[in-house]
Image (cartoon, rainbow, N blue to C red):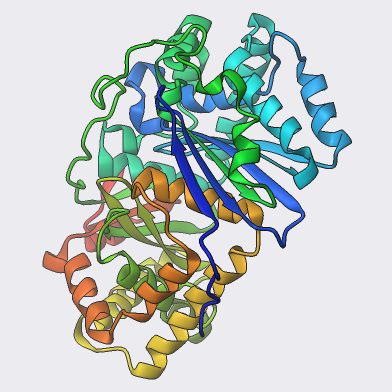
Length: 439
């Protein structure tokens, strides 16, 4: 599958004196426009006592500014058919708006207003605290989400990468407005924010809409540029190895099997992405075929790569019956061990390459996806990466690269396995070598 080539570069970047970064990618064939304000703060930057503050802040920035109520913000976006949303990750928080290209001024104005002038009213904070506590309860009642959260807790321990993005019921209940403002003032500063814009708009047109965002420090923020350590960045630890069983009153056992994976900038990441597609990236993947189609052990089975700045996890998820857990784990091991020993055929590799490139090229037809892509590449790599360059790096991967990465990921029998489900018979737990986990 050949990638389309741009006739001329349409990406531009400006870093202002106060540290704010602006990225734009002009897409003149689009009518839509996506704008994102990316804050370099997420769960890994939080102290234990403030767990969940990044996510709480994400909610609060929708709740009104000095000049707009929450309802007025929503109405302004709705009136032009736009969409305003946000999400929190382990290493960043993003506020993004999608609208027509003609409404670039409105989009920049609203995003600037919520970042500069949110008022964090006490009454709104208490209402949103209840909403977040409900969100935490929903995760507790969703075993597929819960097992992944607990898996990260176990493999990263007390490090921020292991903390739940939502925080805990305890940390959210005791979080004060002062705690929130302290974190906000420390992290929501120009040198910690990337503005990413993709769509039918020029770099110069966006520059004209930035206003006071580019001028000096922002109201109420620390003026001094923070160090990585001062901003809460602690290097990722080595993954904790182990096998755990967490009892929950579920019908199925939810399994996560994982090993250390590549970080975001690793030279092996494209081989690892292709390995992931081959193992558990769809209905034709080896895990899906072995575990679901041939043996009927699970309805849902997939693999996943979770790269971070300085760490990463490659994991496999499956939900199966209590008695089927040993067989399911054995088939997972067989599928991954096969990749360590055998080379993919040229035909097999071509299939997974076309799959991955197709996904990338299809997503590049979305202004929101392009906005996200250029921002993440700036966050993790510090440079622009076009869809065409990504496809070229995918094409350069060989069967031997896949096998080498498989051997690296799966070396020394290191495994992290978590099972969440009904209490297992003693014999089964002993056979699997799993420790009982209380939480």
